[in-house]
Length: 496
Image 1 (cartoon, one colour):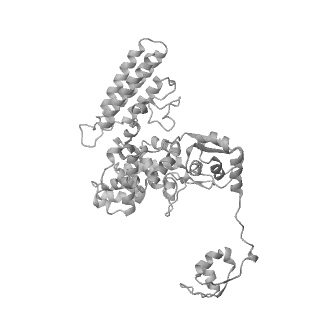
Image 2 (cartoon, rainbow, N blue to C red):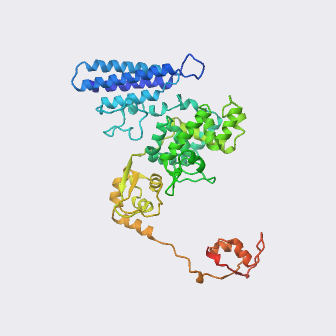
Image 3 (cartoon, one colour):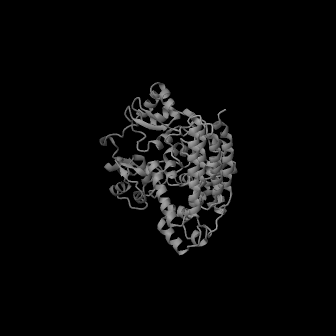
């Protein structure tokens, strides 16, 4: 067995040890509480860069047959492990960077390409979670929960920022009981959207668990969600706030419905508010729900108070008091499902694309695809989420490229390119409801029956203008008194 292959188990075990130090040990420093030692952190990052470069250079030599390269690789690995251990006791050190570097080195050692790879990487995205051979990363095999537990927010583990108090515990129970179906739907929807949304958060150095928590509470992963107040999209931006963060209307399409752009805008908003509110996550979430102006005023008036302080907590609306713990609880469950006897379903969210062989709408595709890939509830929601700019009932011309989960590429060729399921879908889609009769054929009078009210008569006849009927028949509000046998004259609005 080549020496580089023999190093693989040792590197995985060493990584477990290093990560245990980075994720479990409390940060220790000599300055005031909460102060980040930037000089020490920069020194550790420099060691990380130097050690990974040395390791890569030695690996190149080893692949070229240099017998002395193994010793250099071992020495570089030892230096990396020492730096990783120090990271766990240095305030502000991002364990995520060490995790990502170890993961990349494992891939290189397992035959990955050396040329052109960056020295540093952030946490792997949806496509980087799998090796080129389709097998799971050795890092994730060795430390199944590592990707979640090292999730950081401004240098702190997200788990440490979530207070396990009464409101959060109550929210956990709500997600695990009556809201459990919503949580599962949000998880499934997010898995198909992840490759569009997570890179935007990763770019902003924000934890994925927080993205999932907000999405689960705001829309459940339904890209076209709209609230009564006018908030729209998977992350529910108000129109004016969306404009502030680059979400406008382009060619008639409201970009709040674009999952990638919405995630980018959400990340920018959170970054802005974290800076304004001293990195206080609860206050930032409250600002997202209840308005940043109010939260900034409250924070300025109570500089030492947390979100849970009665001076702040009880001045907020019941909606905001419920919103913050629900987001935190969903993020917590994303991080630690096993602690709550919760198992999220396995979803292959790998992105794919199809080119329509003949005209079809998203609705038709949903019918002909059926439950392909084991999708119990069908693919309508996913197809809409991945193609938010399209009217799901409008046929798209042949040759149109649509974004779909990769698992549907073969299913489309088998069931929707041609054949009985495609024919059935087209037949159902082309069915039309009866058209209303011409104006001349519509009834001009109506005889009141026992139990009728004016509003029920208007609904029955398809007239949307109750006041026009009342005025024509001199019926007085608010009772609009009627008697059985009474003949009502109907205006031309009867079908408006």
